[in-house]
Length: 205
Length: 205
DNA sequence: TTATATCATTGACATAGTGTCAATCAAACA
DNA sequence: TGTTTGATTGACACTATGTCAATGATATAA
Image (cartoon, rainbow over all chains, first blue to last red; front, side, top):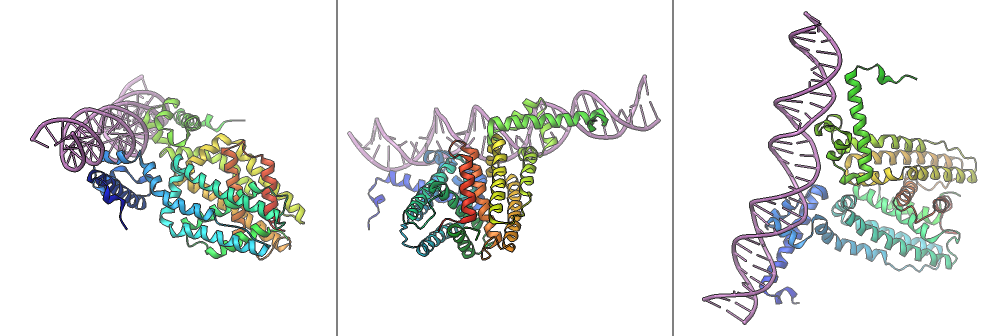
C-alpha cells in the first residue's frame, strides 16, 4: 500500500509533516490543558515550529481544534444514520436501546476528547455550530423514524415528530454529557433502560 | 419607607453607589456585547470609575456577572419549589404543564439576559456551577414529585425517580435554551403540550 | 479647628495572550 | 549556477487582565 505522500515533492512533504506535527501537538495540548487554557505557544513549542507557522496552517485555535474534532464528529454521524425499520413495538424498543448504547458508548470511548469538546462548544461559536449541525442531523433522522413508527401504527399519531425527536435527543445528549463529565455517578445500562422505557412508554400508567 | 442606605455614613453611601453604578454598567455592557466580548474597561467607562475600582468590588468579570445573575436565579428557584400534590393523572398533567409554562415563560421574559447567561455558562466554570446547582435543585424536586406520584399509584413504579426526573428536566432545559436562542422556531404552547404529553404518556401505544 | 487615621479610588505596570508580516531560508527549476 | 517559489520564522502592535503603591476625601480624636 503506497502512501500518497511519497510521491509529492520534498517541500510539500515537509509542509504536510509540519501540519501533522501541529495537529498532534495540538491534540496533546488540548487534552492536557483543556480548550481555554491551551495556547498557540504551547502547541508550537511541542510541535517544534516557529510561532507564525501555526497561523500558516490554521486560522486560529478554533480552526485547529475543529480539524481535530472532525474524525470524532464523523463517527457520530455514522451512529445518527443507523437503519430503523421495526415491525413491532418490542423491536422498536430494542433498536432504540441499541442506538442509545452506541451513542453513549462512542462518547465514553472518547471521553477525554469529549470533555474538551464540551468546553470548546461553550467557548467558540464556530465549534458550537459544528455540534449544532450534528444535533440537527440526529433530530432529523429521529423524526423520520418517528414518522415511520406512526405510519406503522406503532407510535401515537397525535405527537409532533419533530418536537418529539428533539425532546428525545435532548435527553440523550444531556445524559451523554453527564456520563462524560461524571462517569461514576450513573451506570450506563441503568440510564439506557430508563431513558428508552420513558421514551417508548411514558411515565404514567 | 426608609432606605437603609440613608443611615450609613456618607463614605459608605458613596461606596455602595459606586458598586451600584458598576452593576448597572455591567448589565448594560453584558447585554450589548455578550459575556466574552464584554471587558472591564467598557464597564468602568460606563460607570465612570477608575479601572482598579471594578476590582475592588468584584474579583473579576465572572463575579460581577454572577452578582447580576443572582436575582434571575432566585426566580428559577421559586419555580422549582412549586407545590405538586395531584390526586389523579389528569391533575398531574395539568400541574406539570403549568410548571413547564412558568419555567419557559420566566426564561423568555428575561430572554436577553438568558442569552448572556447561556454564553457565560459555557465560558466560566463558576457560572456553570451556579447553573448546575439550579438544575440539581429542579431535578431533586422533580424526583420527589415522581416518588409521590408513584406512591399514589399514578406513575409507573419500575422507573427510577432520579433518572426519570433528570431525563425530564433535560428536555425542558434544552427546549428552554432553544426558545431563548431561537424564539421564532417553535410556538411555546406546542412545545409544552408535546413535552408534557411525552412525559406523562410516552411515545408508543 | 486641626491632626491623624481610615479607606475608597485610581491608573500605571507587569504579564500574557493574539494575529500579522517583512525577512529569511531552503528546495525546485531553468 | 542563478533565480524563483513558497515554507518558516520571531519580532511587533494590539488587547486584555489583575495588582498595587500612591492619592484624595471623609471620619475621628485631640
